[in-house]
Length: 347
Image 1 (spheres, rainbow, N blue to C red):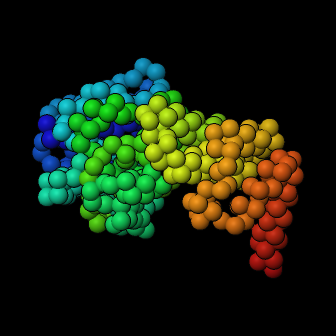
Image 2 (image 1 turned 180 degrees about the vertical axis):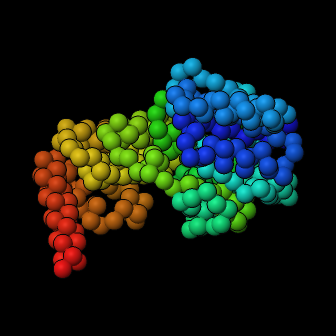
Image 3 (image 1 turned 135 degrees about the vertical axis):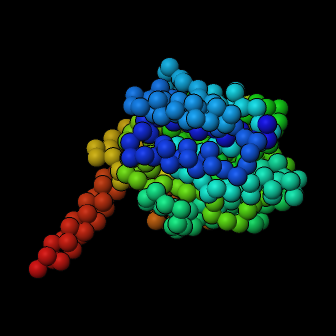
């Protein structure tokens, strides 16, 4: 088997989303591939839809039904256990791919000898193969033979996992998998996996269609999801420590952890949660400082985190309460000005 494509599925039956994804996969120009669709205990008709594809395409589609919801990471792990392909890819069940997506990536792998190959993606808001806004997912200076410098760059910015194919033997030999039971599993797996591959190449085309809609994870900020992002980074830290990677790439891991566990979570929580709690904000600060007490001295932090965010974070280090009240007031003023602007537009 040349390629295994793993599709984690949870409640994707509405609006034809799952069919659009599956149609794009069964119509790929690669013949020697299997599609492993893992239903993660859906409560709608997703499993029935998947089984209909298995009946129509028994040589291509394999359906695995989970009795308990394990989130996308758990579903992907079930798919990895069943995968027989020399290469492995992942597709989110509300996205879709161009007809020659896997043909182009596999050809690049054969031409170059790479063990991981990716491309760019297109942001779309409806079911279409017309290109939307193109997102360049990785940069040319990250590609080629993966020496220590390129591994550093991939740790800092691994890019999306769904627009890549991975040589399966590397995954098996190094015991690579996904965190289970949480959102943001790729935040942990993406950078960690990148360190085990030796040659990365890109196809410079947007061959993956990323569907933006209101039900997407990124549109809903809750404390639970903030905690999932924190847990993903805790697992990343623990895995790096267990695998002997932490000290070798300490500045990059320190920045990656502090950025996702703390900085992004802190400001998305304060902006997106209706009733933020001071105790949670304090917990965030204490969590990052327990692992990396001097993270603010990190060169990547100084270069990549905006001056206003750094100022507010420095304020929090002095007083959680002062930061909390100041930021809440800042948001209130901003919203009041926005509302005033809308009101004036009515006259």
